[in-house]
Image 1 (cartoon, rainbow, N blue to C red):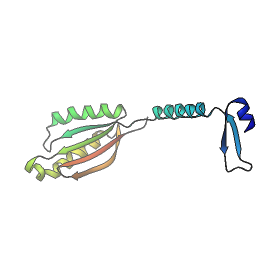
Image 2: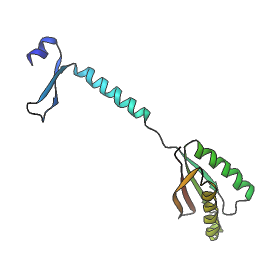
Image 3: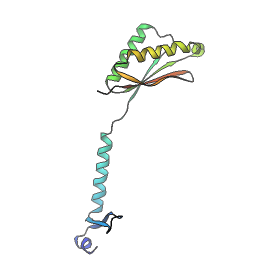
Image 4: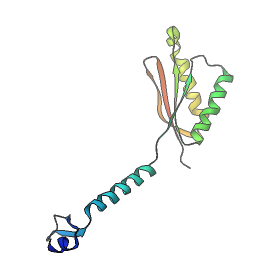
Amino acid sequence: MDIADEQGLDLVEISPNANPPVCKVMDYKKFLYEQKKREKALKSKATKVVVKEIRFGPQTDDHDYEFKKKHAEKFLKDGAKLKAFVFFKGRSIVFKEQGQILLLRLAQDLEEFGKVEQMPKLEGKRMIMFIAPKKK
């Protein structure tokens, strides 16, 4: 402690469980600043998962399907997750099978770009399916 006072710095305990405890003479404020800076740099390098959505109706036409499929391919190539869902309006809920067939067809068409993370599942008026991009 005398050495730290002499130099005008702080005595910081590094490893209290060691025998004897390990201490270091340093500027504690500067140490905290450097630590925050390191954490911020690590946080900025962490990848953020982007989820893109594509919405279908139970009786989506072939041309519309192909158009949306191209967008889905682009999203998966860019590395974003894809949330494809069929939205049932009013009494169209009776076409649940058509919605499921549509989503499974999409999964089959996008097989080379991504893999199905969650099979089609009905949640309220939506049938949802998740597709994750394949690693390069």
